[in-house]
Image 1 (cartoon, rainbow, N blue to C red):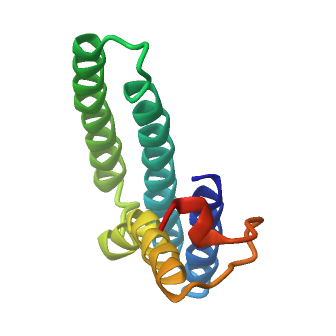
Image 2: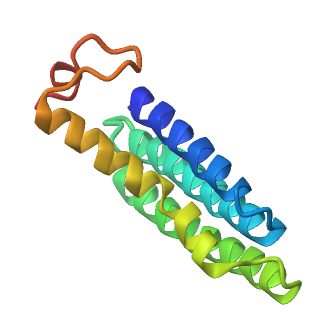
Length: 132
């Protein structure tokens, strides 16, 4: 999972670099915001799932906490989008491309596993680490 997060960060910075080519603040800001939210959500999902799958945790309490956490998270993200969209700083195409950073990373990761590649992300055998 650590390698996938690292790949997601690489894809984020590549998307950010590509957005700089447009010389438009709104595009770069939207890509950065969407990518940061995508990476943050992926990291939070990882930590939440590791806690939920912990056999020592109470399953009823873990389910309630995760539901409340997702509800609050969506409200905060919606509020951030609303504030920046009202200010005129959001380019929605660039925002969607930033939000897709993790999706692109998972696609690249899956493709690498399917082809049996050994990406230079610190793992000797990608397929062996994931159990595929």
